[in-house]
Image 1 (tube, one colour):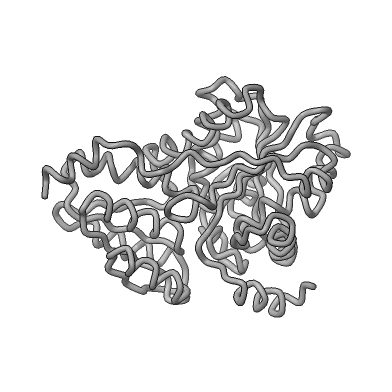
Image 2: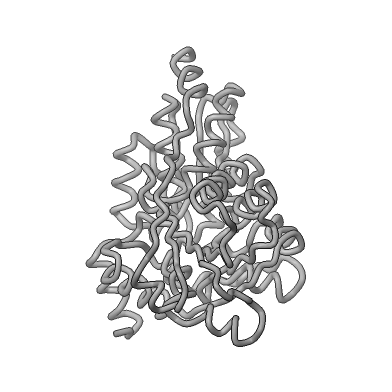
Length: 329
């Protein structure tokens, strides 16, 4: 088994190079070229496989015998996928309100699933306890330098596809792993002047709250329906990122994120979860136009890249239920 594991470790990364597509529909709304970095087509359904795949491969090289991950879904699926590829057992700890769809997907990847607590933070405490066992390693969903290093590959791909830097990069922030990875990537390729528009939903806005306070802030509870953005405290690294790159933090309502999911489905025939809808709302809710009008963002003739982070926790039925629950048409 060990030989087989080492063989997989030395192989290519688990993520794939994803398409960068110019969106006619979103370009019309934004009034400038909008490119979509389609992380929704990654093998594990989201960008998470970049960082988590890299982390798991590195841990396997260091002799890890069992992986454990606390996750609202996407990080857990990336960890389970990576563990299966490496031939290492994995335990995923999820909050009790996790969807049956995600639990089934994890079990399909061969993971043991444990349900603990109401929110991610409680599941995370259980995962950290399990990780004290000999040979077990905790896979943070977003807060580790190896994870950021893996996510930085996304920016290298953008540089290869675009050649010249875009006017801005739009992404969603949950725990801050993608933000930290994209910042690392921008610094690596010499694009540190490219502004990042960091989108969150109200009720999961731990990065926005931290930026305003100038220190880490723990939200009393996650009240947003964008469960994948639901870390009550953002990674400390994100505040350092705000000093290294120009980051514009914006918060949208749940309804705006859900409307963006519906419009994106109609425009591009791709279904993503509300966490990703928060990023798309930068275009659909006119946030980019507002930032330009306020003089905080200067785009001129430049293009925009929106990271379509993907997500597994959505179905057409769930989308209709969310629209009814929130009263958004």
